[in-house]
Image 1 (tube, rainbow, N blue to C red):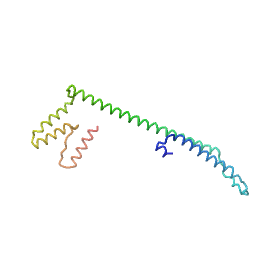
Image 2: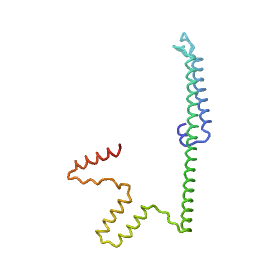
Image 3: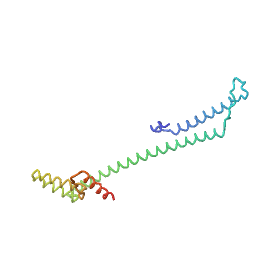
Image 4: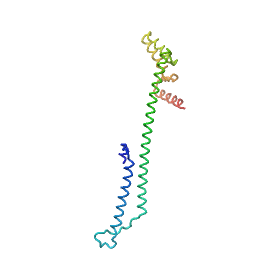
Length: 185
C-alpha cells in the first residue's frame, strides 16, 4: 500500500478498503476455523484438535478487528492528505509561474514605455557606478585596479564593514568574532 501511495495510484482508497475487508475476513475465518476444529476435550477424536487453552477471547478478537479498521481509516486519511498536499503544491507552482510570467510581462511593458518616452529609470548608485566605470577607461593599470576596487565596494552591500589586517592569525580571528557578535545582536 505504501508503494501504491508513493506512486500515486488512482483510486487507492478502493484498494485500502478491499485490503481491510480481506484481512478482517481472513482473520475471522481462521478464528472461526480454530473455534470449530479445536474442540476435542478428551484427545480421542482424530479429526478434531485438542481444545484451546486458553480459549479464544472474542472481545480481544473484536478489538483487533476494530484496530485494523482504524488503521485502515488512518491510511485512507493519509492518502487523502497526500493528494490534497500534492494538489496544493501543484496549484502554488502554477500560481508562482503565472506571477513570474506576469512580472516579466510588466517589466517588458515598463521597458517599452521607458524606451518610447526616452525615460531613464535608474538608481543613483547605478548612475555613479556607470560614471566611475567610464572614468576608469582613461587610467593606467594601477589606477584601473584601484577604480575596480572602488566600484566593487560600492556595488556590494558591505560599505561599512571594516577590513581587518592583523599581524597574527589569533588577533584577526578574535576581531572577526567580536564584529560578528556585535553584528548579530
